[in-house]
Length: 180
Image 1 (cartoon, helix red, strand yellow):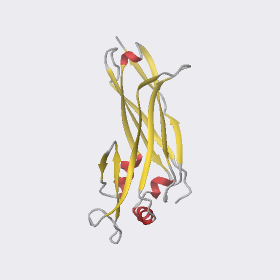
Image 2: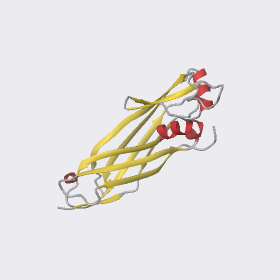
Image 3: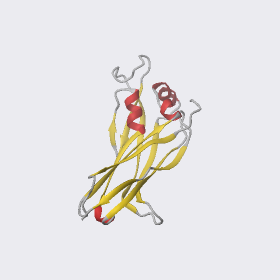
Image 4: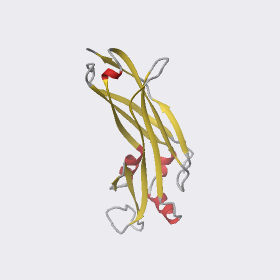
């Protein structure tokens, strides 16, 4: 592994609609990525090594909470607490493994829905890039201008190709103006 540290980066918040009315639903898309040593180490060579060492499951836990800013931060919307799970498996499918002699591939599950990526880059993006939508009623905020921020938490345990990680970051705040 490289000496790079892992980090939660590229955090952004996107709102819709732009100026909600008091009785509208508001949706905030929270996007972020994991960068650093683990992203580089999550590759076919290390999958094979881990599989041979019987380290064939990986679980990445993450959570997203929206809150208003100010002295009393108020949590809004339903927070997301979930995980993504990786299962390493042996395959004979030549379309999956990019390296001819290698036979270990990954299945990545989110909310019990399994995906088998077509290549290593897709696997990295599927596991380490996030786009979570949180909805709430504009009436939860009230009429006026409000600043909304997100708290993001990601963690995993030590594995053959990954050092343990546990980090929480806060996003830049966005402004929402609720009208009557």
